[in-house]
Image (tube, rainbow, N blue to C red):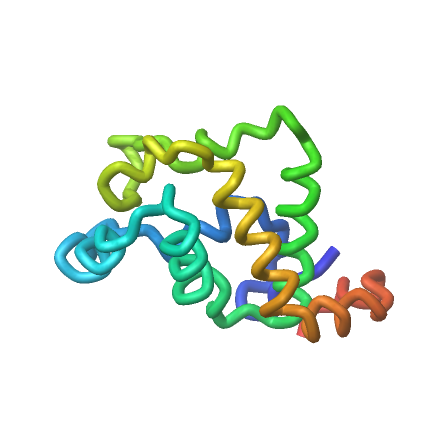
Length: 140
């Protein structure tokens, strides 16, 4: 199991990790307005959203590999409820741009993330894939 060197805790990503960059809580007038210019149901807008916001975080190559693999596994499960990841929760300290909880096909959104990550993260994914993941257990 990979230990996040920043927190010292196990790093166990879920597909929701790809959505953190779209959280507009307390940023409605800045990030929120910027994201509302995009239509996540439009293929071109969706690609721009993913490339500009989703795949540019400060992840290590190992974290990218684990993120990619967790999303790949979720997409293999026909019953995985991607729509629930965008569901509005009034009790949560997070929110997505207006209308995102009504996205036409959330699975397609995540399929596009996986497709684009395979291209954008190609070198990192390869580097991690040839390592022995058992050596990732150590804490720095």
